[in-house]
Length: 265
Image (cartoon, rainbow, N blue to C red):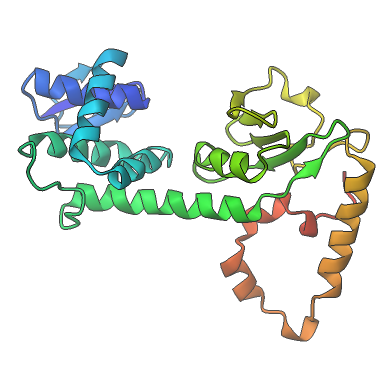
């Protein structure tokens, strides 16, 4: 049984695909660094990441798959689920084993790898839609709008274009507290990926996403209080349906919602 190990990067996975064809091998398993080696693995090959090999594989995929399939492939990778690695590796290998110009396997849901990758991608796309709905911005005194998120999947790269288009003349920062990075948009150009060397020194509370009082604009303090008051006022206790509420807005999103905050900054 042949097994490959890689560095758990997309370039590393694409390099593994390249080497499988270069070495004329069909590895049964693709392992991340540190994963336990299967009992019956008698040939373990460590794949060194090669950006040029990864680029060639990606270009080949673009020729063989539709734009929608490429989008789903990228979304599945952003799931960060460990069970994806093998399915995605075998899916991509099957794409290249198909005759060029022949029927694509991207909609062959009878194939377990195609089905697994597609189902995972759908979960990621569903969460990125929810992020667009549930993000709450706060306005800092310098005019920058801030939002903090902690999604299950790494969906931040999928939503930046949406907010750059929607708030195309306003500076904003969306920060993923779970993955310790964010994107900053200065009101023009393209969003830029950023990280903080010391998260304890930032001007917002990572636990609830709230800006510190001395950084929050006076206008936004008033608007937040008005929104919480409105949210409470329209709530009809006799019609409350907690189960339906949790279906529409899972509890894991509540921590950063203005309407779910009390005066706890």
